[in-house]
Length: 84
Image (cartoon, rainbow, N blue to C red; front, side, top):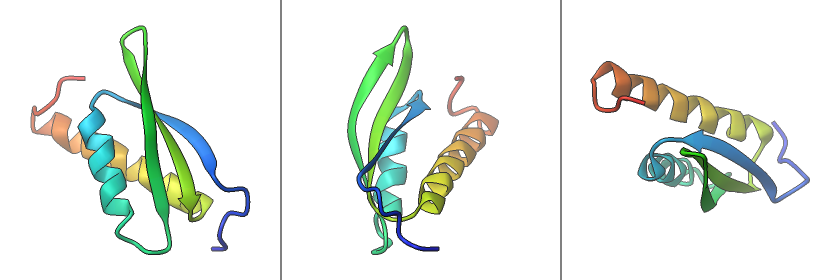
């Protein structure tokens, strides 16, 4: 897939764990063809949103990041490591 030409792409993802999204982003950035950055967090009535930017990569990378993050949450729920 071609690189996304409208960079940086800013987006948000809801998270209950700031450290988990940071870890997922760090792991994704090991691939030299993509670069995500966590630019901040916002508490909206108890729901935490991570503000992210895609600096290098494709829309598919954004989708994969979201899927990977969601799968990790489900695994942690299954192991009773989180309750949100």
